[in-house]
Length: 241
Image (tube, rainbow, N blue to C red; front, side, top):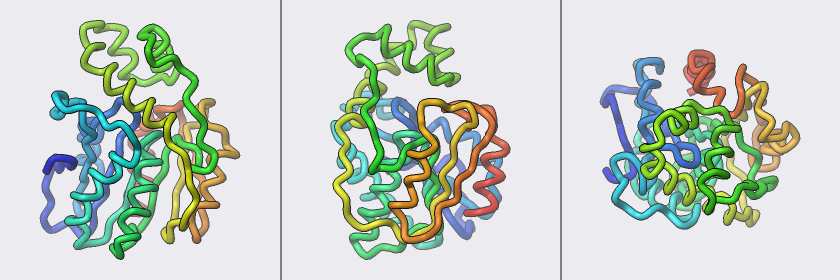
C-alpha cells in the first residue's frame, strides 16, 4: 500500500482506526498507539507523500489530492467497523474522506474523532510566511510540539521536515469548505486545555457538519496535547471505537 501503514497487523481485529496526521506530520507519529489500543482494534495510519518513507515524492498540492489518494486505499479496508481520527489538518482531511467514501455508497465510520481543529465552515488561513524558514520554525515552536524542539536541537533535520510542512500549510490555506451533506456518524471533537490556536466556538461548530450530536472533550495540554496526554486520549479512543 502506498498511502496506508499498518505497523502491527491484527487480522482478527473487530474494527479499524484510521489516523490522519497533522500538517508536516507522518504516519510514524501514530506507531506508539498500537501498544495502547485495545487488541481487537487494528491501527491504520495514513502516510501523505513527501515525508518519511515517501520523502522522494512530491507533496500534495490540495486537500482534494490527499483525500483522493487516501480514500482510494481505505475503500478496500472497510470490511469491518471503523473509525477515523484526524489531528489538526488531519481532522479536515478525515472529514472530507468520510464524505468522499459515503458519496460512493460505502459505509459511514462508527465515529469521527477531530482533534485540535476548527470546523470546516470556520477554517481560517494559517498566518505564517511559509517562504521564511525562521517564521515557519517560530510557528512550529509556538505550537509546542516535540517535533519543533527536535528541529531546534537538530538543524540538519530541517531540510527533511520543512518542505512537507510548507506544502501542507499551503494545502490548509487553499482549502475552502463548499457546503454539501453533513456526515451521518457521531463526532468527538477534542481540544487541548491550553491550546489557543483553535477557538472553542470554532470547535463547537462541528455540530453543523453532522446529523448526530457532537461530543466536546478537553484534555490537558496545548495544540499537541496528544503527546503529553497520550494515555488519556487512547482511553477515550478505546472507549468509543
